[in-house]
Length: 472
Image 1 (tube, rainbow, N blue to C red):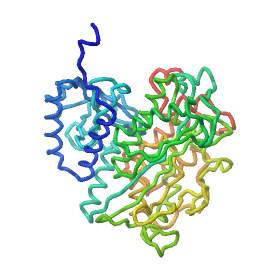
Image 2 (image 1 turned 90 degrees about the vertical axis):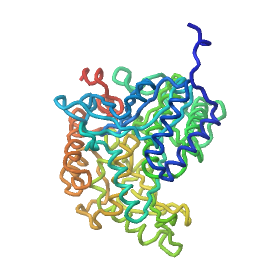
Image 3 (image 1 turned 135 degrees about the vertical axis):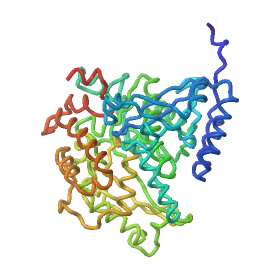
């Protein structure tokens, strides 16, 4: 069969950007769900060139899962989509495996055919129990419910933007292959800002940024980072759930583009000894009625009393929530003060070793930047935790330490022993998450040493699959 016999959807990048920005605006304006459902299903029915719809969801650890549904099947069965939850680590047990997926028609994306394949569109879904209620371990649903409750209460809207760093390694599946090769080979040794046009790292960044722009991210700037073969692509501030979705899409885009270039985009927090690790600085603020509640020209560092209260509550709970912000064994290698590590439990406008930085801002851009976050975090759990802790958390710390933990065992002990963390996430999620992290930690060396260990990559939550797990 020749390609001329196929007529699947392939849209130019400028048209993709226009469609995705229009969809994003409707989401930000809170267009009613039933209106969006009708509109999207009518579009899918009328657009004959679409063959499949990719439905995305996240597990408890923040790993992105994708299911491709035949378009005709999805149109008939959109209210009865199910999947095997027992195959998802941290979800249901084998004896209670069936879970449901509810399509979030507001989170609908047109994707570049050259990167994701022809004839496909993408949409996020929420995980439901068998009876149709939100699944307890679906952090996306928890974030959506909390932000909607805030909006209904007093019009509060949370804005976020994450600065996600990654490394680019030679060859495909470099992370999975580490258990045999015991090393990563960087794609480039050029550094901060000065990579030449046409350099492999620059070519990757340019291609990934084009895809990111087409998906409506509203790009701001991109550049190589301090470490060799390290990159960062920044994009616009947006509402909390959209921002969390974009974290997963960002990593998906980078991995897919890298694979097409015979490379691996890695978001391990510290894959290489002796150089800076990967962080995910997350900027956050709260507005009401279009007014930024964090801004006060007369306040310290331009931050309002409300903003400083938000910061103080996060600092007070830093030990309790550190495992949420840094969820892997490898993440604690990054919290090393020799490499600009933000491991001090304090806030500062200038000291980049502080857990929280107060960037220079005005009435539109005033925000706080939480820096002690690794890019392997569950973005929904992260943003929910930061937002609720900043608004409702305790103001006094239960632990007098001035530094964050330097190993996952201490972080697990603090998290599992925290009444606040249990109240924050609910006892079921608190227990499940703690058990997952303990299982990964127990398969890795308690004393990290200076060499990256095979086990900490093999059991890293973004690298693990059934095959690798079976090699242990």
